[in-house]
Length: 340
Ligand code: ADP
Ligand code: TRP
Image (cartoon, rainbow, N blue to C red; front, side, top):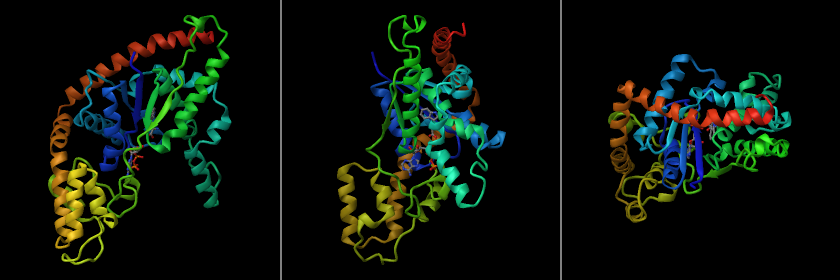
């Protein structure tokens, strides 16, 4: 039987080149070798309490993005977290197997506390219980479908480890229970994080990590003109067109090579080193490659966003498929814990 891979995406903003190369593309590749589950973690996005209209828009944008980049909703299960109420019941159950100390040690929470202390504020200032319990809901996302592999960015590794620890504690507690031992197998699989190592961090326009928080991104679905404008904002040095340029020191090259095969990368490297190519020309070359790669997905994305009936039907189908697995499994879990 195929192993199961599952990953969630928080709908928090317009997706950018770093999201595509660092998260979307590697996650979608897994559909070749795994039984794949992709979902939109809308209730996780609520921890930052966005405006209702904004959350609704981002959910549709993320759904259209994954479909535009090739997610096949017939092959993979693709759903919205909030459409599967079983996950939230499981989240409560798992919270009773989660030592509070785990949550105290969660990176995101610890960082928030450290920032507050630095600013002389109360340690828990601005921290809602959703932020504190975030990893438990994430464990429920993963364990509800007994995922074996969870593709995530390095920042999420600790969360997957919590899910594994929580699963182990649950399995251990009910190990002797007849109800859970129908097949003598522990109820929960122990998930493993899969950190995509092939992709380095994608640099932003200013040379820092590309991130929404730095406003240095190349959003994936800008029209050509504004996209070119963004590309022209990539920071360069003041070398004249004639001077040879060191590709390893250039943000333009670092971004461009991510879209090339090794042969093409070698050619581009030579053009930089030969001199005679100004930054304007280097940016134009990069823009052409990028635009060529994004043309298809951009068209598809715009088409999908305009066709809300189709998007709704895909998510509805995903909900039915997800719940057809989640509901019976939750029944088994309830029996195991003595709720039924
Ligand atoms: P942002 O930093 O823009 O807020 P997110 O944290 O929403 O991005 O990123 C979602 C996922 O996209 C991350 O878990 C990570 O895997 C990937 N990602 C984001 N930025 C980059 C980047 N610059 N390079 C590589 N991967 C990235
Ligand atoms: N916490 C993840 C992020 O911020 C999103 C997420 C929620 C997730 N639930 C998940 C990822 C389950 C993998 C599995 O990127």
